[in-house]
Length: 130
Image (cartoon, rainbow, N blue to C red):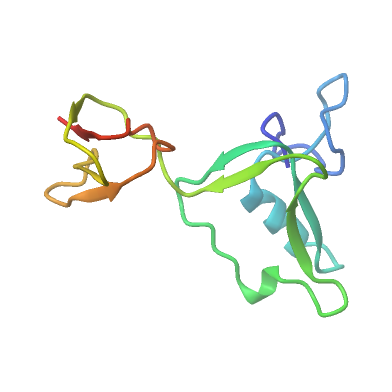
């Protein structure tokens, strides 16, 4: 699986071929579905370097786990850093509110307050959504 992958490719190559006609998959959900549909359960899903954000919950079920002899393993490609992130970057205007965890009302939250102390999701440290 890779940021420059394609779910229409075979998923058997670590990088896209020069013709860009085959290479890794683009999504973990497609890689898991493909592995589940093969006669041999389990195996490795290697993710190439990057941040992989999920807008929907990634559900892993017993059918995804492989067998005792051949378990499913999801791992970073050797020597590469991978982040699997369920958060969504939040855009908009921000107002300085002081130190500590920030509180803001995300788009579509409608009266629900969400807190964060991380800049990973586009929230400047010490700022609140206006």
